Image (cartoon, rainbow, N blue to C red; front, side):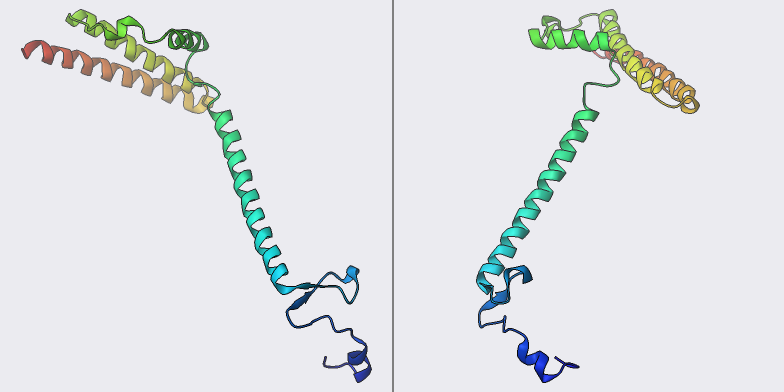
Length: 161
């Protein structure tokens, strides 16, 4: 130990023995652990800490997912209740009946596009006031464009045998 006299060097206890590492100072100057045990302990501690980090990350992601998907946020609560009832009963028979006429097909498309418009409106209502009007205009424009495409698609199917 540079800067210390021979007396300081001689009085320092020999903590390092071959194959050993010092323990905490509170345990006393002669307390030692085998080096292999210390390395194993550090390896085990590292594994435990990694596991803890993974658990914390997983629980954080789960909590975030639960707050984000507490239900379909843009579906009207009344409609969501009806959907839950229908899901509990199983697939409705109407899902398996084909719309035969153009009018029935158009009516189905109008219902689907109307539901999409309502969901878009609900989403727009949650935006800040400055963005709300633009969002509602875009939702209406999308609905009108989709309805025009649906009519054109049905007209194209009617002409093709």
